[in-house]
Image (cartoon, rainbow, N blue to C red):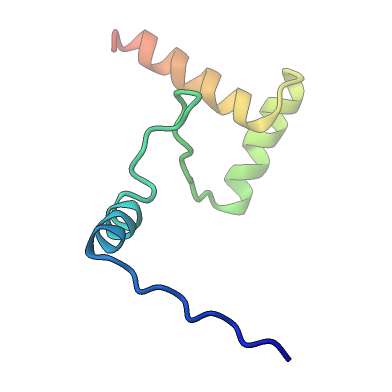
Length: 77
């Protein structure tokens, strides 16, 4: 069995770089300019959303984005 070389100790600079990477995790803006958002709906409300999306032949998320965009436009926002 071969004897492995002892790993070198981390320098203070390496530790600073690692800490900076960890502390900034999740803070960078998404590359595509879109930020994921989580919504929680009651089951019956979600069924109504799904029915409306299906009626317009849209995926759920596209339907939700469309309805929100229309509501903001209607309010002049």
